[in-house]
Image 1 (cartoon, helix red, strand yellow):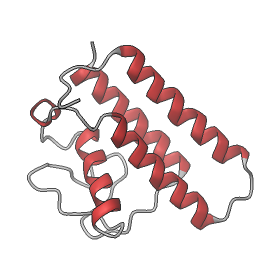
Image 2: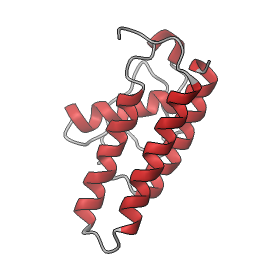
Image 3: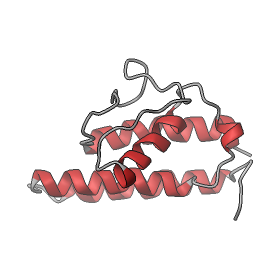
Amino acid sequence: MLAMAKYPADHIASVRTMIDQRLAVLRAAGDVPPAVAAAYCADLVLVLELAFVHRLRKDEGKDGNPLNELRLLAVSLVENGGRMVDGRPLKVRPETSVLGYAEGDVIAVSADDVARLADGVLAEVTKRFGE
C-alpha cells in the first residue's frame, strides 16, 4: 500500500472499535501503575497513526488539524524521546490542538486524551479521506 486517497467507512469504523476496546481494557484493569498506563496510551497513539499511515500528505493538509497533530505525536514518541517536535510546516498550535502540546513538552497521554484524540482524528479522516 503506497498511498491512500480514500479509506472505506468500514476501516474507519473498525479503527474506532479497536481504540474503544483497548481503552475499555485499560479502564477495566483497575489500579494500573501510572507508568504502565502512560506507555499503553502512548502505544495507542502509535496504533492510531499506523491505522492511517498511508494517507496522502497533500490531502491531509497543513492547517493544524488532528491528523497533523497525530503525525507529530507519533514522530515525537518514536524519534524524539517522547518530547513534542517542532511541527513546522504544519500549523499545529497548542491552544487549538486536541491535546495542547507545545514544542519540547513531554508527551504523557491518558486514556481520556487518547479518546479525545481518536474522536478528532476519526472525524478528520472521515471528512478528508472517507468514501
